[in-house]
Image 1: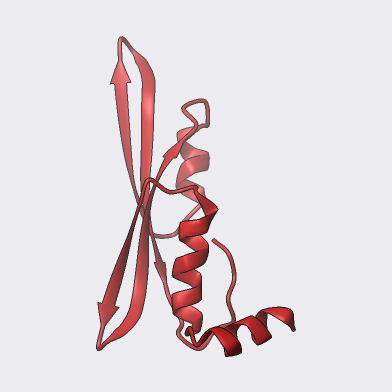
Image 2 (image 1 turned 90 degrees about the vertical axis):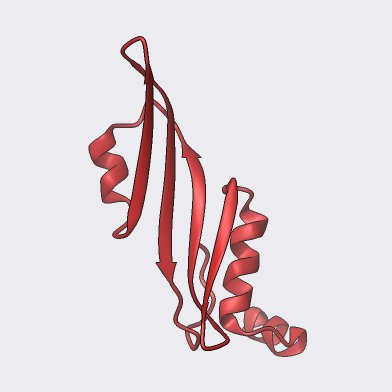
Length: 96
């Protein structure tokens, strides 16, 4: 109920609130907002993942994502993921 009051008083749409929640999570190196017909359609977030995590587990975490795996001397040194989240402009806000 408290979320709805904040939303009503802030003048922000549910999709705008979702973008702000992603920004405030500090999980992402960059965030890309995709707009169609003047409305937020999707959000892409770039995040660095723990290199100790299994690749198959990373693949299961999101339906739409790109994984970039960097290897040096036979060891994985960096894993970046870009995932895409489709936005329902009428849905209640929910963190990523």
